[in-house]
Image: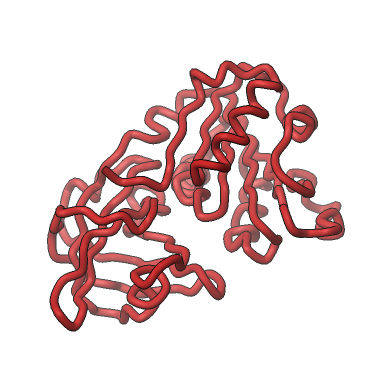
Length: 251
């Protein structure tokens, strides 16, 4: 999701805590009270957030819920613009906010798919974190390959958590690093489910890690990244008409 605005006001909620995931990414844990809608959100859905500014409530900004259903609502937000870079990191425990949602249908019924390929660009990992956290809690047996594209391995703020999941789930994590000159030196022989690739996602990378072009494909990231990935998926033999996509756009 981007910093696009919405007129939806949302219900009153409170900040439980904030966690800096890295220098530019903050997770915000929100107490939504007895709002049944948030108690029953689905992986892949998003919420809008409004915070108090000096001149009143901010516009609503949309962010994917990164938590698993049943957990405290968690929005993991990467700084880009004043709202996400200044206002969100300045939130304190107990601050009142307005939260609306959940919205969206991305990843609906994903738990029914036997072979899943997730492709994320940057903070586009958040809906997939929600799915994988729910899989982890449920002890799911779905076969999942996750490609996560970042500039450097240091940008992969959830890398350690994902590594742990590869031990418990049928999960392969492929870090696609566009600005690392030697990404392979991060490889750990004790983590055979974690791989590293240099550059941008390509049909050759897909061939090294994906068993079947008929798997269920999910793609989340900015528009230009999606255009590139869809072209590579077609070259790999995927019917891209069936690829489920989510862009950082709110309407």
